[in-house]
Image 1: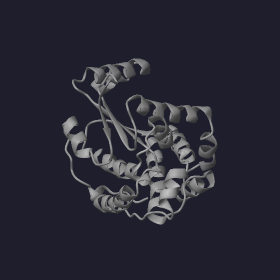
Image 2: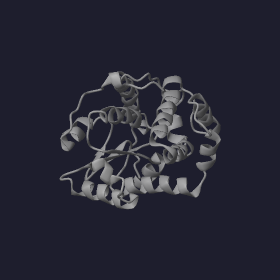
Image 3: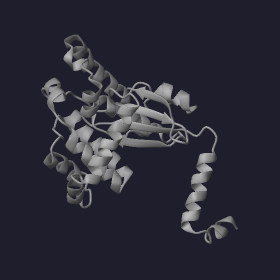
Length: 249
């Protein structure tokens, strides 16, 4: 009978009921995951958190942001790639981490120079445009961009390069997404996502906010290797790399 009764409740009133019920749930937390496709550690964190989504009850919000804007604002001169001994270690660590997550990975040619001098603004805006259409689409596009760049060493930073990825994914009306990426709406969302991360102390990628059900930030988290701590904070299970959940790009 409950289902029949719902049919007579106006849509807006029904939505307010669900929203009110959510707010009343005790200790309900939300994870916001900020990432940029230029960041290989964002790739690992993205895979880890999307795989765990299948065993977590905690909602996860995916937030494309602009990594270069974060670096500029935080005045972070200590990027590992600028320090030779850290650069050498990072190259090994990336391969080690990719093996753990079961991700095909190789360093693109002239990787250090590319990371320090290439802008990811185009693919990040296209991810925002994709997310406005459908979050699952955005995740598919992000995963395919990372796969193209880090498995095959092919560039992903111009519209024509991203267009190839969209065609390979058989995205409908992909030209509209490319055009939409130049819209004020998309630019504003990417800026807002970046500012939100910066406003809570972000200095790198990936970055996470764990909030309460009113949006108050309870914990900020940097890095792709903090998923066990995040799971513990959420009282959720940590299942390791969950390679069986790996999705092909």
